[in-house]
Length: 137
Image (cartoon, rainbow, N blue to C red; front, side):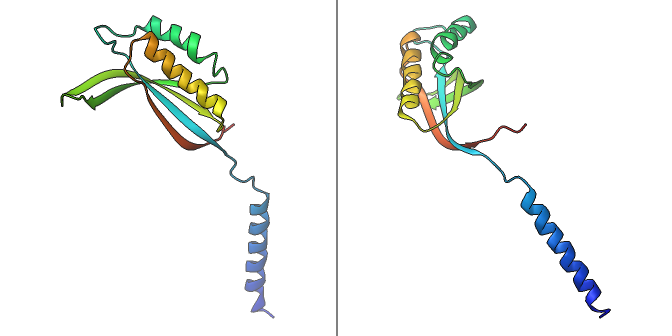
């Protein structure tokens, strides 16, 4: 019977560990979509979108459509134009995490269209990716 003591201890430790693992909260995250709108700041014909113009655009077009929240960050865009020349442009990126919903999709398109019209842009790049979202409290 003495030889069974280490085996019993190991069984008790394993049972305890499995029980402890069962009470740990599982990793909880929500599947969402992540949309990014790349808004170039150079205005065709000259000039750039000013900070005041950008803030007004966000207040009037973006926030009313997504009052729950969003993220904006600065970037430096680069692409090759039709003439083969590399073009560089300061850019602001709006990122929005949201459920898959055609009404939300329409709001994102409306923001891009409003930006194009207001600042005479040829286009606004939109990137949509599946994502998982979790608030870590």
